[in-house]
Length: 157
Image 1 (spheres, helix red, strand yellow):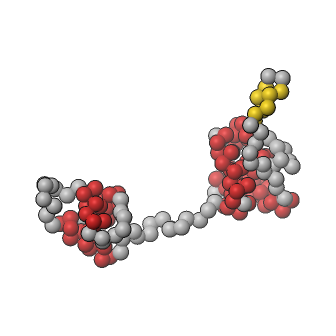
Image 2 (cartoon, rainbow, N blue to C red; image 1 turned 90 degrees about the horizontal axis):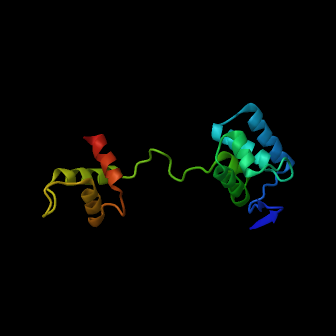
Image 3 (cartoon, rainbow, N blue to C red; image 1 turned 45 degrees about the vertical axis):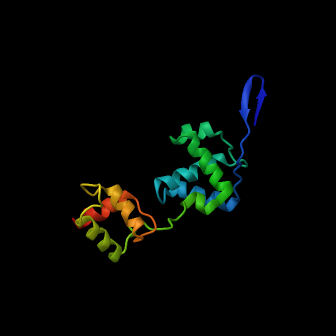
């Protein structure tokens, strides 16, 4: 929604940030100590300046001040309103940790055995996509990407 005031277009913000005194203290401490990741410090700075009960800077002014895009400021604002203070500041934990195995040992063994065998009729060689397709067809796994097949074969060969 936009309003015009003497030829100037003013965008009304959909997500308004209103911080409590406690949240302001936590954010100010993160900024002062620069604790945590640089992303966390930037999110803290953005929230402090976007506070409607505080400075209430525009998204463009915040983006210029902290060297990020206005979309980043909008995303931080939206996340604060929809998901809360803690998730906005610290980020959301991953559901599966990085480096977790997508295939167990038995599934890997079947994939490797398939790769060492002859390809299906009509094909002269195995491709990563063909292997991924066959692993699903044979119901070794429900779904798999060819990139997972590549990584599995690379670490074994």
